[in-house]
Length: 431
Image 1 (cartoon, one colour):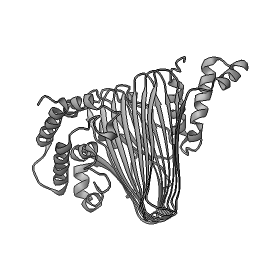
Image 2: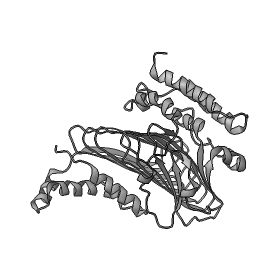
Image 3: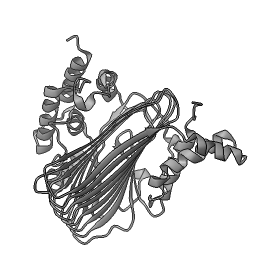
Image 4: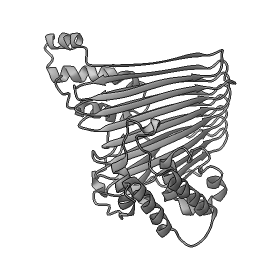
């Protein structure tokens, strides 16, 4: 084949065959279906509307080789874990669970380790949840994750349980030219409550393709934080799939400040009356980084509400892509939904492609969406300079203020502090 992406697809299918162990259990059958699904679709191209501004051809070419490259664990000392008081800390190095670096004596509701082993020791729990929310048919990367996932985290809270300690899942890439496929399964029983932090970082250029599936039961409450600060030459693709039942509440925050190419997708279904979502996203890019962030909110029941706020700060020749879609189905009367996207460009070379969407089939709703893009306010900058503040500090103050609407609502101080550090590291090119 002359098409590099098609060649990569065939090589990945061959690699999957070579890695399989004897046997024909339910997990292997599911993974076989996933790799066959990926084989039918292959890697997405810019001819597809949803990938119009994100070219993954170089990623596709590297994928088979990097996925077949063994981990060397060369620079574990470079880890900079978040300091979160009282957290249950789970550590994954190059995609593999490290019990020796993780918190001891995990609660019975929290599982971590080899997906093959968990599928045997906790078959009913894993089989009934794995792949139930992620849409493999619509996402080649979700299919790849299912096919190649080796290790997994599962939080399965019974009804009424309150997990007082936050679950901090640290994914660290220490080896260059390696690939990992983290999988997270969350099922919160009725009236339960939990906080989960997923943190992706690394000291080497690697690829990570993560998928999370989270079901939030009746009256349950989930706080979900995702912080991505991978190596500057890494590739990062990720998806989170959420389903909210009656009166469930979710707060979801995503911060992207690393990797050369990032694509993050948040899919939320408000499946029953009273379900409420608050979603926030912060995209920070400099150099020639590419950040693609997408959110789809499906209001499938009446009396549901959502509020999504996304901000981008781009410098140098960074390129951002944002697509936010709110779908209100015919049965979802009394829906209340709002989506805003604000973008700050700090140089002439920075670029943002933004597309907020409303798709409404009900007639008794309150919905709004909007997007703005601009540069620093010269009047505000002049005011600070006239008060004796140097130009770099003045710009840093204004940029931090632009993001503060999101940062001030973060209940985990370490996440807000890391975001402020990332903001401060931007070069602030002179316009």
